[in-house]
Image (cartoon, rainbow over all chains, first blue to last red; front, side, top):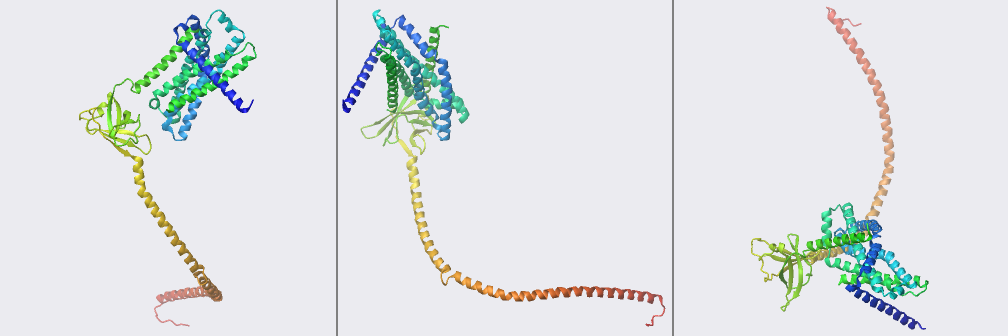
Amino acid sequence: MTFLENIGHLTVKLMKSFAETIYFAGKVLYRIFQPSTYNSATRTVLVDQIYFTSVQILPVFIATSVIFGSLLIGIVFQLLKDLGLTQFIGNVLMGLIVTELSPFFTVLLITLRSGSAINAEMAVMKVNREIKTLETFHIDVVNYLLVPRVINGIISLVLLSTLFSIVLMSSGILFSRIIFSMSIDVYSNILLNSANFSDIVIALVKCACFGFFITLIPIHFGLRASHELTSVPIVVSRGMVSVFTAILIIEVLSLITKLM
Amino acid sequence: MSREYKVGLFIICTTVIIFLALLYLAREKGFFTTVSTFTLSSKTGEGFTEGMPVVFSGFNIGKVHALELNDKGIVLIKIKIPQRHVKWIKADSSFVLYRPLIGAARIVVTTDNLGSPPMPENKIPEVAIINDINDAIEKVQPLLEKITQIAENLERLSRKVDTMAAKTDEQVFGKDGTLSNINKILKDVAGKLEKLNATVDNINKISKEASEGMKDFRTLRSDIDDAVKALDDVASKIDTILSKKKETEIKVP
């Protein structure tokens, strides 16, 4: 096979995979908006998924947010003071840290913890023929397995990212007091003036997109596993690489939307 | 606490927080207040941007909503003012686009008479433009010319100083220059000083002798003092004898 053929083969493969993912996403999205999708089993799975992804992780997530967020805010504020850019404190806090960094940090955390778990779970279910069993019993796999996980991803990402933003802004109160001797009133006024409604909506939509894709792609790749155990690590690693690619694409798209 | 209860609590709490935050932001940003739209005009759209603040007495009272170009080539600036700030916009209000050297451009509203009637929405006042950047450039231009002139003068002066320095160099360090003359004079002075050395030696000798003579004078003086003292004693004795004797004549031995 020549070099050009190799490139062509790779491109076709990538495009095919991308098209399959988009088709799969459309299928799941359609089911999400179908009222018939939801039954007691779906609701139970959804509650379990939210519990495992958001509630169980909450203490660790808040602790990490406090430590990481406080340090980050402290460093950024000190840097702004050193560079004489104190007047841009609100813009940096709202435009960069709250609307960009919070979703990114949250999506990384959830992907590492839950995305990989979902990918492995789906692959193992496929290997153990559990998916086949469900189909045999006429249980809709999309409704029972996919939709609750995807909805969980959307809800968890949006809510946890907001929590992270709140922790960051609360740390900002402390550090603005220490570094700039700024009162809470002045701090909140600066934040309000810098807060852009459209930016916040874009950030929330971005979180929802992150949540959708970091659960959908691992499911999609997990279901690609063959009936051999050796296929599990292969589909998990491929799935995770695809998830990170999706995160980067969404991040770039959101930045372009903000710039427009 | 059941799993369902924890999940429900988490979702409700965080959703309420998000909702309240958005509601607060929307209220502060004036989403729920009614706004009045006024139209301003300008010959140029340069410096105007959508979202630009409209300021009255240093306070933001509204913002530029839209910019349009009409059929006559005049730029129409639509500003939106919340109902609570409409009272500052009067029929005789003036509007100035202020573009500071540092900071964001803004439309400054000035109302001299707050008792005048409110501005009708169909009135289109023209916006005056104050451009700090251009003003600064205009102010700096003559200053730059002067600086150039000073630089030219300095260069001319430096050339003159160079010529003068060359001449001075020749006059001072040349063959018949001041320095060689000074050297000659110094040599003469040195010769004369050598001759003076002998005279100084003689003076020293004389001074030594004079000081020795002075010692003799001191001895002589003490001798004279003793003699005078003895004569005083004799005189006093004579006085005593004379006062005791009746005869005034004394036989001197």
